[in-house]
Length: 228
Image: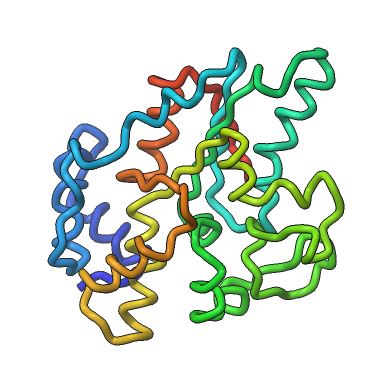
């Protein structure tokens, strides 16, 4: 069973897979990872979310690292700046955030961070104090010492205000589910089930973060921004 991102990438490279073969490879991925539960069929994924990107100006922020939550903040900051500079309503803009690679941890509820001590595991720093924290920085509010407007940039507020948050299923399996499986000694399918259940409400799971970013551009007309 492959349990680390490095092992997965090494196996992928050794197999001689090229870009043209990726769809077939992704279909076989769960078995490669040792999971008995297959990735959902195409018609089981939510692919209607691009319709929510209905502002005149649209952006998709690719967030592959935790980075104290700054990637999530940037997704809100730009819209406010655009509205202020061009003297238009914030509703003129639409934003999607893709949480992938190490950034998948930002998609997890605080209960997951508490149970598995994510802050220590990932060396997470509080965005204002620069000190180690076990709080998910994408969930911090004024109660955590954040001044406005940053206190209103937490993922729940971002979603409430019309933002779209997308999570990478590959990263969820490779980082989150793999850690649950190793720590709790549960089966791969149970670990994946628990990982999905601990996503922040409103976060939309996608086959991969790269897929989500491409769909945001192709179907949602969003401009791509690499946030780290």
